[in-house]
Length: 155
Image (cartoon, rainbow, N blue to C red; front, side):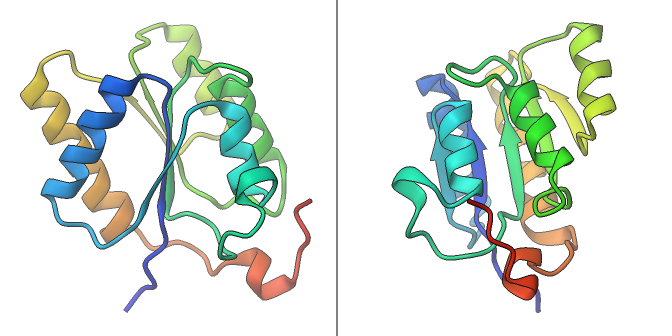
């Protein structure tokens, strides 16, 4: 049985956070959900810095990453994750309202694992989040925790 890694939700919109957490709770995932409200906090979580310095080691099962974020935007967070050998294997799903083709193309150029446009309809949004949670939190197989195995210091 795969270990249960947390899901990192990086979102600054309170309504979207609330809906996403409700949808993930409804599918009864056992994974913890960690919420980062901006890109800087997401990087602090991934690299065990700041308020996340004492968190348990290991990578999240998936990062659900908004594109438009304060402090450090989603594309910058994605670029950092995918350019670093210690975090490159962490799955990242861009979960955004943007329908801009340039955002889609740039995300894939940087190595995103999936690009999902948030549905406007409440029920469709709820269902999309449940599907994402089940796939990335339960069904998807990820490599072993590279930092824990290799002793990489991410600071």
